[in-house]
Length: 96
Image (cartoon, rainbow, N blue to C red; front, side, top):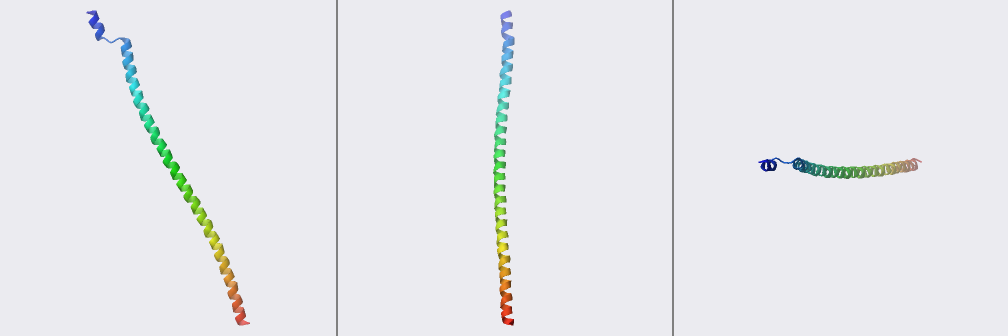
């Protein structure tokens, strides 16, 4: 009968609803996937930021250490020069 045939054949609206539901589920999964990727990228950015900060601190420490070594070297050279002059005076005293 026509009624049975109409019940079996889905209406255009039902087909559109099913397609919409299917597409909605697909998009929902895609959104979840993108949100997960975004989270991982955010973590990657945080890790890189921490690594950069660690390297920056290390560089600053190395520069401070280098400055300290330069200062110590200058003091040592001055001490050696002063000691040399004192030895020279002592030798002159012995000679004279």
